[in-house]
Length: 368
Image (cartoon, rainbow, N blue to C red; front, side, top):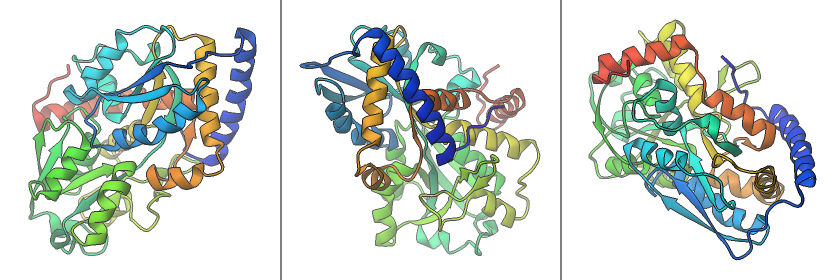
């Protein structure tokens, strides 16, 4: 399996190559596209309370400013079927004038990877212009967090947990499999339309365990931590140059799931279960969110959007404003985005087979 390494060195070198490539395309095709007086519709296939909403709402005004003609960029939320509804809609669209883009997430990628019969979309048809890495943080109410003995989660094994779950085949399989590996009894309430809805369940006391992607955690959960009503349990981690899981650069003081697993009796960081978890973590987080133009997009349109996102990243204040809203992760364009897309839409047959069997046993979900 191809493993995309979330390192600045790799990202920078690939982005440099991409910039040269798209510069040639733009010159060959003219001067790109002009969007003056137009409205760009950015479809997000989730509710407006989760991490994808935070990500799109962060980028939308910056993209409006960076695109030629400074069009209005409107984020349109299209939740349903754990993002499959919006993705299937986008699959039916063809490129017209550059005024339609789509934002996917790991919860869009996982049903595709697993062969979910509701999936009618094909990533190979879509044209990626940005790939954003991210992380995830699991957290608990303070009274339950106290049951952990340092990194050892064994003290939580006698607790009955409730979790708001977007769907068995969605990105939520990363936390639910992790919690199962730790020996926790977590009952999922299925069908929420975004992770922000899971956070609201936690805030209302309807759930007592949750996780959020980094952008949503920074804006929605950090205030809870500061108020003393939530305590971070662990992150999923990040990847080093060799593909090893290390601490998340946005949350360097919070242990990774691997560290907690190593410290908890019965949880193994080797073997087929661990390898399956790690494979889907890699598919779901280092390139979790991507921006696409629809099938048939022209080279000029690709060059225009690539240049716009490059201009955003080149802003002198970008590191500061993105770090606060998105976390400290690569934002990739061009060849780097293509590499990220490939990693996010491929897993080994062994990992897929394990997860398909696990979904059948745990949730009665048949994908065969």
